[in-house]
Image (cartoon, rainbow, N blue to C red; front, side, top):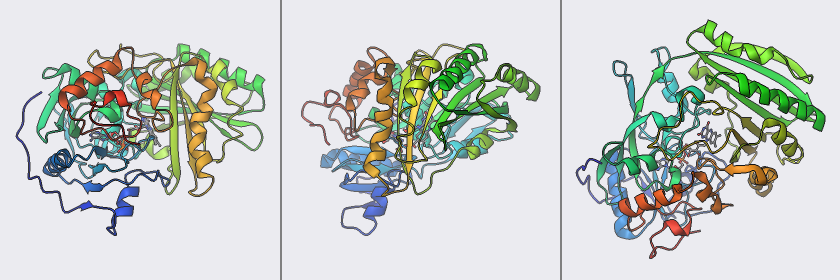
Amino acid sequence: MTDGDVLGPVDLPARAVRPGDDAYEPARRALSVSAVVPEDRPALVVAAHDVADVAAAVRHAGRSGLPVTVRSGGHSTAFAALGDGALALDVGALDDVVVDLGSRTARVGPGVTSLALAEALDGTGLAFPVGHKAGVGFGGFLLAGGNGWNQGAWGSACESVRDAEVVLADGRQVVLDAAADPEAFAVLRGGGPVFPGVVTSFGLRLWPEPAVRRCSVHMRAAGADDLAAVGAWADSLARVVAPEVELTLVLGKADSGLGIVASVTAFGRDDRHADALLAPVTRELPRVTAAVVFSSTTMPGLLRAEPAWPESGCVAQQAWTRAGYAEVLPRLAPWLPSAPSSGSSVLVSSASYRRSAPPAPDTLHRPLGTLTVAAYAVWRPGDADAANLAWPTATLGALTDVTTGHYVGEADLRRAPGQLARCWADGGIDRVRAVRGRLDPTGVFSAPPGLTPDLLPADRPARS
Ligand SMILES: Cc1cc2nc3c(=O)[nH]c(=O)nc-3n(C[C@H](O)[C@H](O)[C@H](O)COP(=O)(O)OP(=O)(O)OC[C@H]3O[C@@H](n4cnc5c(N)ncnc54)[C@H](O)[C@@H]3O)c2cc1C
């Protein structure tokens, strides 16, 4: 950790709003991209436009006894930027992207989105394992670990973080990297919403730009036998495809039974290599296959193809498992017809089933299973809000006995705070606690709901 200056004045930026201000409710709601948010009422919402704003806000919070929450891209599935009585700091405007082609590196602000970086790199010969949705912010995505495109070959996105500029609880700006403070750097790469500081920029390693080819296998499953057959096919495919191939099954309600799309994406050196990577997909298709569609795209093209959910409520829950597709799919089947919204879906992915290299050692985030299962509720506001909010966690309840952990970026920390301790391998929460105790001894960064009380200093009680 490199010491920096104490930055900026203690005065808050003019963009700070309080309950009662006209701008308060829009600013409070904008802390999440979901159109349905909890009722939590921050004491202050501060929009930072530069590092000095961030430092001033953090120092103000420290002096006033307000816990700090942070918003970058607003995609927290636990609504972690919202906290009753908190100073909610919006750093979404810190969205600069600077690419250095020579050193194959980039520096990005926390408000940069997956699509913005993919577009900035498009055609440069370089790429990054950006998140799967266009609007996900780098702040929360990289801190949580980052399950990005082509992670089988490139690793989790946080493993490509070289350093970060961070404002600490006392308002100092420091540079964190593996040499300066390996433990704090590890918690930066996987601590997610309990990282004790505000990241104002990340230094990234970039990868050679791939040729991207996709194969979508559209299927319709009427009953348990069909699902078992699809699961067995996906298990055998996951075993043989190369690390540069990402396999995700998207399950949703259909007119009769379940609609399943196996989305298989190959990241090759060139088109020929990408085609060869996809060859195993169509060797033996499940009998319920209705259509197979091949396409070529680019990294930004992958993101533009993902469905967007403007003006919708959105909440998710993820679980790791070592069970195979053939076991997981039949267990989920009864839950999909019960989804309160037709926009809801479950994604089952073996993206990190086979990796080119083991996870980097100075990284808290690591795969805790061979499949990730994520349930997303997406709905029109006011249309059974409570049922939709509860559906993802209830759905993944069908996998409780085979769940081996959770991803801190998509854990349901509001409904199930106990999941936090299961977001890391054994001893992970002790490493988080030790770094928090050292960098934030008074618990300035303590408001995200779901933060377990045992991560807080004894004299600061848990909120909400
Ligand atoms: C539709 C959707 C798709 C998703 N797809 C993926 C995916 O493909 N891969 C994946 O890995 N995850 C995915 N996620 C999960 C997502 O990556 C995490 O929720 C992540 O935290 C979102 O980051 P954000 O900056 O957009 O969210 P925010 O809500 O702004 O941030 C989440 C939390 O992270 C912390 N944080 C954010 N920025 C900072 C900062 N600058 N300094 C300190 N702390 C900070 C804060 O505690 C904050 O409350 C998805 C989520 C949704 C809703």
